[in-house]
Amino acid sequence: MEITNCKARRLNLKKRPKSDLFSETRCKDYQKLFENIKIRMHHLAEVLFLLKNIYNSNKDLYSDEFLAFVGNRVIRDWPSKDFPFISENAVKELGKAAKTTGLLKWELDGKTRKLLAKKCTYEHYHSIGYFRECFDKNDFTADDMYGLLIDKYRVVWVTNKENAKLNKEHKSNRDENTYEFLKIKIFERDLWKAIYK
Image (cartoon, helix red, strand yellow):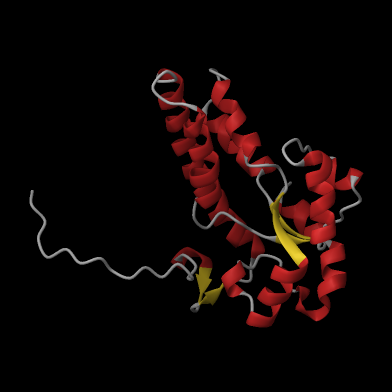
């Protein structure tokens, strides 16, 4: 089949998926938004399982670059999966501009984006490398990967000082207790617990 007159359309990367909208604005029901995220995480898990099988069947054909691609491109760039939270210290530093929970960077007003860029870091609760480690486990299924993503993939705006603490000793090895150990507290902790129950 030959395709002719195929013009590249302009993509709108600053728009939520239709399922996340209510009357053209972001749905304010966090549980509904997270249900959509869970569906997208399930799709991501299926893709990661396929990539794991390709990698394990062709290790001599690929180098560690394949694993870097999985982490830096597939996991990090998978669309519409982030539900950002913010630390209590970031809220103190930003003041009124700290209303960021559940909002993507481009949904924030310009002033808030500038303050965040200056004073905070968009941080993964667990390092991205954590999710590709299962590639060496032969019995790891797509359902296992989904459970891991739902349980461990989270993003948090932290202060630059908190980020320096994280990077000093816990850049690539974090567990559920790392934030608590470093005294980094999540703002809207009840919502955090409700979503990640």
